[in-house]
Image 1 (cartoon, helix red, strand yellow):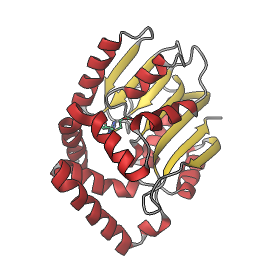
Image 2 (image 1 turned 90 degrees about the horizontal axis):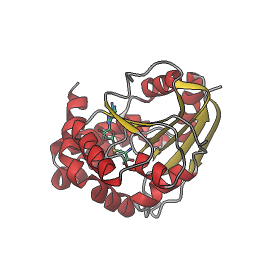
Image 3 (image 1 turned 90 degrees about the vertical axis):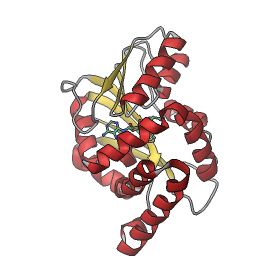
Length: 239
Ligand SMILES: C[S@@+](CC[C@H](N)C(=O)[O-])C[C@H]1O[C@@H](n2cnc3c(N)ncnc32)[C@H](O)[C@@H]1O
């Protein structure tokens, strides 16, 4: 509960400057621009014209806007996020872009999605699974995907060493201390707490298979610093 509050407080504070902040963080740690990282996620997500798409933890709605701008789908797009301020920003940006494709925004938790079973053809999720309970969100994603539905996740990947208590403590402390002066207490707490949700390739593979997903493909993206956690693109299908 405290962690959920910290996440909402952090992203409420971040909403007005989210896209610029993430762009500079991704450039610093990975050498990726935010725009390039999201473009890559979209390029790695095959879409049919009338697919119904869910963007989990949509934030300011960059993924829906890009999907529309790139003409990737003419179906319905739904963006879900727990932070109202992020969705308000998304709504403003979408209204200004006047998209031809309808985008609906839902304020709810990804761990209990207010959608019926087998509703979506495609689910995407960018830079957010580290804030989510991975087994729970994967089971929700599986539930709301249609048979044959596709999932693409792009986020930070972890190292097995981080599960060792000493490393875990040190990385959590370093994360907290990095974000505290720049971004304040709520962001520092939520980024430090996120470490437990940063899965290795092997952990992602095991959890996806355990949930019931098939055709799992996990790719490491290049990053500019050897010490930086690896960016991953994770793809899977509901059989
Ligand atoms: C780093 S942002 C990513 C936003 C967007 N996907 C993007 O690519 O820019 C993480 C987002 O996850 C959202 N979030 C965190 N916990 C959530 C939850 N339990 N359910 C839904 N959204 C959540 C936050 O509100 C925030 O908007």
